[in-house]
Length: 449
Image 1: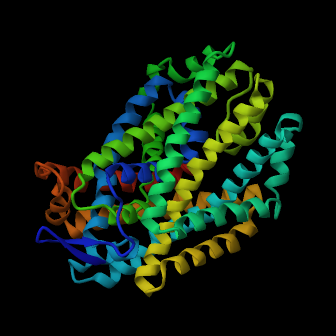
Image 2: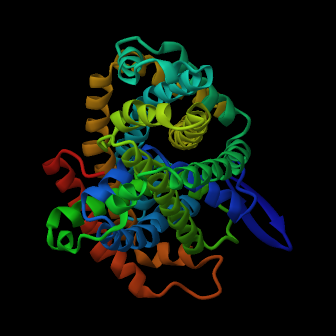
């Protein structure tokens, strides 16, 4: 980190700089949080588990995880003034066991790299499908056949490599500068394009059946434990609480910013993104009598069938996949930065060199899992075992090892009033056990987010 003095007060800054203001920080965090889960999983899960009734547990968990979980990751990053490895070491050093913390930090860091590897493969599919929509190929060929081709072994190397190259170049422009500028453009564009899609879908004949699927509450689902489990998992993973990525963004946050306010805004816009995706996707699917689905089949097979039947379908297909590409690239940037910042800081290497190494590893491993089944198995392993365990380690390290006295002090910086002590009790005795439950149930259910 570097130190500067302003008005006689010593301030600390990360060597990579810091976000200029809270808007840039929040948009970067929203860019990290908004991803495939918002687009191909939330709309289906909303309808599958009770429609509007599902929103009740979902909102409860979004508030809990956003205010207590997300804030912990932002706060420890800003407190330690570094990302994953350094932050875990900082927590455990408070117990004179810094080396244990450093070693534990590699688990969530591996989670970020693992997601980046699989995510880059999927984003390669998005880029390939976007190209097909722009050329019109998507409108005339069978979407199932196109998806089978690009999701075969070594079937999409150019687009896969291009996605990684784009993410690396954007980061190499400058860590905080590049992240902030990219998200200030891509996130508003994402929301604008999805609003356009949602408005267009509203006027489709038969779209009302999709709104019924999404929003007519089936109150009996609130009595089913699976509804609460899936809402909990969806909220947890939607906010990108991984014990890694949001920590590095926190390390780039200025001391004058209110972390809890940033958490609230991040959770709010992430939820709006999920709702917009639902409004743009499901009514369109029902309007043309196509069976709703979730995951890659929804995005790469079902929706192209919808666009084929829509007036100006090629235009709206292009809008959709541009939006998805924006959401995906901003998430990939966060994953790469979480890894490269730790390597940069730990091994004293230039930031750009760390980014390049991260990109090379992602391509070197990802090229062998381009097959849909292999990348699915890879992502299951990472998202069911590694990521939730890393998030649990992060929560435990902050609230149980470092303790509320120090993290509460950090959360109070930038605020007019001190954060009350009951906040820390919720973090320690409610959030940490729930993070453990998310991990255990994810294993039992084979994934809940």
